[in-house]
Structure formats: C-alpha cells, structure tokens
Image 1 (cartoon, one colour):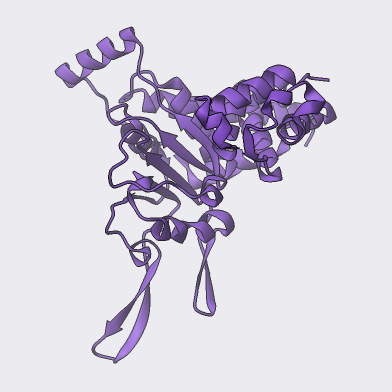
Image 2: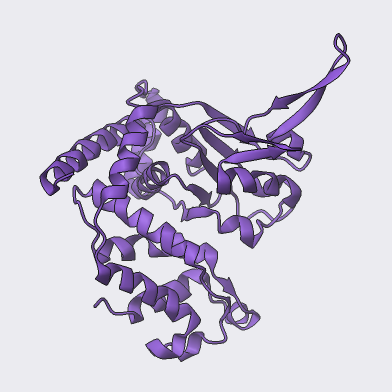
Length: 327
C-alpha cells in the first residue's frame, strides 16, 4: 500500500469512527475521554477496564456503543455468587440420550461487558484469562476458538470495599487501558438534565459492522512508527526499571514490580489508533504522552513506602513522562 493509499484509508476510517461518536452522543452528554478510550479498545483487539463511582454513565456509554456496532453483544453482571461455569461452559445431562453435552456460555460473543467485575471472586475473574489472552477456551481435551473480533470491557467501582474483590495483577495486565471516568462539566451536566427531563433522546443506529471493524484494525497495523518513537517508549519502560539513569533516584524504592514488555505493545497499539483519530498515518510523541497514564498506571505495583507517602501510580507515571526526553 502506497503512502497516498494509506492516507485515503486513514481518512475513510476516521469518517467511520466519527459516525460512531455522533451516534453515541445521541444518548451520552460529554465523556469525550471515555468515548475515545472505548474506540481505542475497539480497534486494537485488546481489552479495557473502566473505573470510578456509580452514576457517571459508564454502562450507558458502553450500551450506546454496542448499539452502533453490528456485533454479538452480551452483558454479564458479576456478583459474589457467580461461578466460572456461568461464564464459560457447563455440562448438561440429556435425559433422553443419557449423555452429557457441553453448553458454551456468554463468553462466546464478539463484545463482552463484564459489569462490576470486582464483585465476583478471583476464581470467577480468572475464568476470563484464557479467553482474553488467547481468544479461545480449553475444555478437557478440546479447544474452542472465539470468533473475531473478541473484546472484553470491564467496569469496577473503586470506592465500595464491602463485597468486592481486588483484580489480580496478572489479569490487570490483560487490559489495554484502565480509564478513570470523571464527573461531567457544569455545562454538560445541565444539558444532561434538560435532555432527561424532556426525554429528548434520539434512536441510536448501527453504523459499523464486523467487516468494517476488522478492516480498520488492519489499517491500525499499517500506521508508521519511527525508530525514535520505539526508543522513546523503551526509555519510559527502562525508567521504571533503572530510575537512576533518568535522574529519578527517588523512584527506586517506590516501585515494587517493573513494567513488562507487554505494556510496550499496549502503548504502541493505542498510539496508532490516536493517530487515525487525528487523520495521520504516523505516530508522534504526543500520542504516546496522551495515552501513557491510562495504559501504564494499572501495570505498576507500588511499594509500601510509596503507599505510606500517599503516592499513586498516576503520580509515578507523571514523573517518568516528565523526565524521559524525546530523541
């Protein structure tokens, strides 16, 4: 594909994505950062975790997005009594044939919403690990492939502690982004009140099908990343492992576990989508900076010393980004 052809494909993809955004805004006021994160998640074949208090339109935005897509969608409400077999598969006994048959459960869809994932025990959360990493499920001696695209979106409430379970680090690493959903602005909230009181919401139309999504995902893979960008991303990772080489000696005792190479893949993939959203065929350093906190904060494990100082992973990421130079 020539540079001119790629530019045309990027513009065409950008126009399709803008149609999705317009449809979502028929029901959702504001939340532009959340919508952008969802689009990055949709076009990178990865998964995303949404976090913050209830009532900020997390589930509404996801539901609105699902209505713009011609995909198999399933919402799973995670509860303390949920079992792994409720997610993946179970055996059903047929009284006519006196045989057991395997019933495949909700995970075999294109688009999964794991709502309030931290309300279920870790054994239930772990039932998603193979599906999220390999896009398949192994049952006894058989492996069942999940049809592409397969993407998981999870929400969690960080405030309520009673009856919730912390996500294991291994599962957190499967998520491309951890996006915090913030309160709307004054103008957006007033506009929301007006629309709700007048019931002035339009019907959301499907604007992207499976073929469109797979084609845009292929275009994402064509976006150019220069050697200087690769080096910049490596320096960010290396700064968490060897902070003294970047004048960040104060971080040495604050990070318990370093960043894995998997984050490199997550960051580059996200930056490519941001480039398409901007109508570009190449990644620039600002794309990396824009998405670094969302893709990195949930992959850093803080030491007790950092926690005692009331530091957050976002604070650590900001220090690293501010200190690492773009060559």
